[in-house]
Image (cartoon, rainbow, N blue to C red; front, side, top):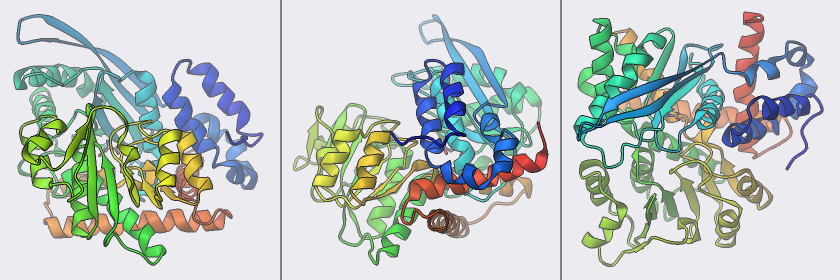
Length: 448
Ligand code: GLU
């Protein structure tokens, strides 16, 4: 572990003491703090105004009961969360995650990351996150709808276009957002499009939102490659996951001439040396809501493994798009041994800190999620712009805006890393650039 600056150490100790048992939140704070030494050294005004102490404390945390009735008539109880972390730059903005692993520590790690990610986009959005320990796997459409309606019945009192604008994350896509938007509309008797993003294009959504996180990650990595005089052309790429982020990352890699040879879900991974058949993957995951193991039924030359790790597959570029801490130190060592040169986080914090250190010491360009995957939330902000002006932009226009935003984030990270004496260090660049913009706004707004 890197030693923290003496101004940061006591703040971090306080985080550990005041948030016991929230390992992912501790990890996310530590990761940011390890980059901020040169910032606190240069900016005593941040230290005097207790910006560090304030930024690790959510402005508001809401925890609520979500009761609903399953298809067999049994009453089910889940727990709902919304952590409104920081609104210095704009309304709280961030997704909702429905997954059995969700507890306060996960939502706080995601909300904390979201502050800096949203700041990096340069757009007027604060940071928040929410979700539930509800497991959508195996649930019928009717069960999903009843759960979403019950969840929104409580959440609706805490959100609004100027207050807090949720979106999707793991387990929450167009279907779930539709049920939640429908319930919000019914409860408020108002078609307030700007209250949620990730909506369907026929009911206030934006073109490219579905593709944005995956496309944006690859646009960012393309900038990294260009800065090394390279491109995706002819590169072997491994993308973990097979949700929204992974699918559209694969699509963009293929459009840019790379070959994606492996993809995964929570049950295992598929290797297809001829290149992943994206139409088949979409059919399995988006239409059938099936398992990736079904891939080999239609493509017998490919292989499926339910044990081991996708990171043992040799590649030039690795794009973890599944979930937090899916890529550990051993995986990083294997990737480096096999010659990986670029790693970009499509998911939030998929690499452990030990893995990130392996990449750094091997000279691998490692791009953290708060920079690489910011295209999703950036396009959510574009959706908010369209909703506010009652407009809807074409796919091409929105995609061009996304591309431009990702290039902007890349350049901001690279320039900040240079400025602070860490050339090529995207982790330091992202953390410092993201932090400084929020810290300046917090200073300007006074002690609130
Ligand atoms: N859940 C996504 C993220 O991790 C998107 C959030 C949003 O669009 O508000 O950034």
